[in-house]
Structures are given as structure tokens and as C-alpha cells.
Image 1 (cartoon, one colour):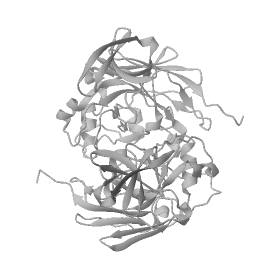
Image 2 (image 1 turned 180 degrees about the vertical axis):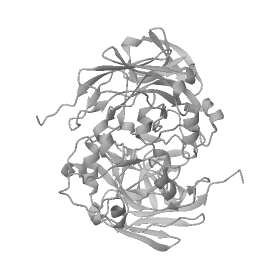
Image 3 (image 1 turned 90 degrees about the horizontal axis):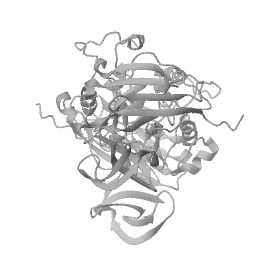
Image 4 (image 1 turned 60 degrees about the vertical axis):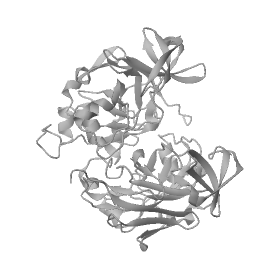
Length: 265
Length: 265
């Protein structure tokens, strides 16, 4: 089932996507709800991020390969005690919805990359859950783009603006509750041309393992987001580009890239 | 004026603190409001963090001294281009209120320290404001404790649990709107014994400068919090301790320290 959050007729609603329509629900998208008779064509609504002020958690380099090696993470060896997901937070202000622009800040060097990702959406409050239990606390999955300014990533001590600048966290278009996480595949296209192909089965830590690990110290709440991490090459986004993250069975997250208006020029 | 957020009679309210009472307000604590006739003795309410899901921003080592030197930040030289506030985020789940316990996680090494701090509360949405403008977007100031697990701080790549474990961000007791930030002094006491004395006038970057800097890439929203950073020695908190952060003219934030219940022992 696909559950969307959207804006229609000056109200914010949750609904179930059926074909090219969305059916508004009553109740909680995170718990019990029933469908109403209010149907709206998808093209008549503005899709929104699934919750307003989630915390956004990401693992450190979560796929084996050159990226992990560069960061001194040469093995994904579960016998190594220091091998854990190394979570970090992507700033909430960065959250943006399907179709909304990714804005290159006017004071960026311009070295801003896409990073295709799958995103787990927490459905129920959890603390100190085991990997085996964690799956029950995940509502479903959606597409995400961990937009990253490589220059700021290298030079700052934290990722606050490298990965947390406004608009650097596109997520959507909706949450699919019926997909097996290990079967997720992620395709990124820039201007229609394939740029990444990632298999969630290759994740060093599964979503359940990441959720379990974070929950040892952090209470995760409904709507909180957990990114998969990315794999393989990324490249620079230019104003005018359109970047799509597709998970077959879920949907397509499409965002145009624009330059921030610079009034000083 | 002191504005508090509190729980009384199964409702959450904002109110103005007058003597030992709080007077409930109608309207927005962040914009226009008027006082009602509903007065409650402070001892009859449960004080809450000032907002529910703020982002919590902190500067890197923001006071000259040995701490900054250890981190390779030997000068606070404004002519040095790399000298900027180095913001990072403290996780929102860590937020806790006055009187609530600081919980030492059962899997912590126990090397958990207090860090007394003043905290600016954002009053109005701001983006790309100058230091001169920033003051207008700050509603007021409160006390904060940037509780930190030094072992996790050394060993993890991010501060996610070192400074973001549940209960590691006590803030309160309320927001004072009438204090001059550069005149703020912070006193920390553990079990009544003085442990820190910090002058906001010694901050490497003022609150206005930090807010301005963060706002270049991040939209700050009403209720978001900006910590001052701490100065001088900190020490280990033990279960049974009571740690107080006092800002004269604002109030006292007092929290007991407890050990997390460990069902495995």
C-alpha cells in the first residue's frame, strides 16, 4: 500500500494512492485509519514530505567499495568490534518534497552531488529494539536523495551544511508499506540518463540493523527517517538538471536543480 | 519577561511567570499574545522544554582555552578565514525538561560530563540574516546542559550518541526575553558545589554571530535552540548527583542524575 501526505484545498491530508488518484484517510497514517470517499487525482495535489519535523538518520559509509575504503573503512567485517553503522544526522530543515527544487546555495563552490538512497520511515516509537524486532517499527520505504556539497564535506568539522543546507534532503513521493527491504533497488537518473544503480541487499547494515543500533541510545519516533546510504559514483548537479531517484515498486522522486538567487550579483 | 511552557490539568500551555505563579497566555508565545486570568502556582505545573521538536544547534569550541587548543583551535583570530563557528547538531530526542532525570545509558562507560551553557531560543523564522539583524530573531535565553559522554565523543565519527542520547539535552526552566546576551553569566553546581562559571562575554562568537552564520545555509524556525558552548573544566556525573545550571536573571535548571535500569544484570 502507498500512503502519501499532500496538500489539497488549503488542507494537509494523508491518503492512500490508488492508480492516479489519492484517497483521503481518517485516523493516523502511522496506526489505524480508514479510507474516506474523498478522491483526488494525483495531479491535483501537492505531495509533501511524510512528516513535518522528523529526525533524519544516516549510516556512515554503508556499502563496501572505494568510498568506504577512502574513509578508512576497508572491511565490512562483522567480527570487528569497531564495525557499527556510525550514524549521523541530516538536518531537518533540509527536508523537501517531490518536485521541489534542490537549491545550490549561492556561496557553495558548486561541487554539489546527488546520492541516491532508500529511506525507511519509522511507524512506531521505539527504543532498545533488537534487529529482529526493528522491522515491526518501520512503516515502509520511500526514495531519498542525500544531496551533498563535497567542498563543505571536506572542510567543515561537521556535516551541518554539507548535507544539511535547505533543500538538500528530497524525500518521497510516498511511503510503500508492502515492499521487502532487502529486495529494494535504487536507480538514479540525471536528465534521464542512468547515474546510479544500488541494491539494498548490498547494504553493510540492513535497515533493521541500523534502526536497532540507533534505538539503543535514541528514541525513534513515528515519521523519523533512516537513509540507506549510497553506493557507487556520484557526480555534480548543475542548475537546470532534473534528478530522479526511482525504487521500482515504490515510485519516482524527481527534483529539478536550481541556483539560489544571488542578489549581490 | 519570563515565558514558560508547561503541563497542567492534562493540557500543555504557555504562560508568563510572575513571582511563584504562571499566568496562562492566549495567542502565540513567539508572536502576539495576551495574558488570561488563569493563574497556577509554579509548584502545581510540570515545566516543559519550550518547544516540541526544535533543531538544537551548537558551536564548536566557542571559548578560548585549553579545550579549543586540544582540538587544534589554538587561536580565536577573526582574521583567519577558517575561523567560523563550526556548528553541529545535538539530537532532538535528547531534549528534556527542568527536573527531569539525566539518564546514564547502561552501555555507557560512565564518563558522562555536564557542560553548562546558555541557550538562545529562536523567535521568528530566519534565513540569511546578518549578525546585526540576528538579535531580532532571538526570542530570549534560557539555561542548558550539553551532557556529553566523553568515551563516545572520542570513539565515534559523529556526536550522535556522545551528545544526542535520550535525556542529554536538559533545557529550561523558561525563556527570559529581557536579558542582554553579552551580560549573561552561567554558574554550574553539582550537589550544591560550584563546578563552572562562564561569562557569555567570553564567547568566541556571540549568539547573534552564530545565528547569522547558521542562517546562511539553514532556515531557523521558532523554537529552534542555539547553545553558547561551554568553557572551563567539566567533570563526571554520577547517579544520585543533582546538577544545576543557573543564569542569574533567568533562573535555575536543575536535573537529577540516574542510571538507566539494566534488566540484564
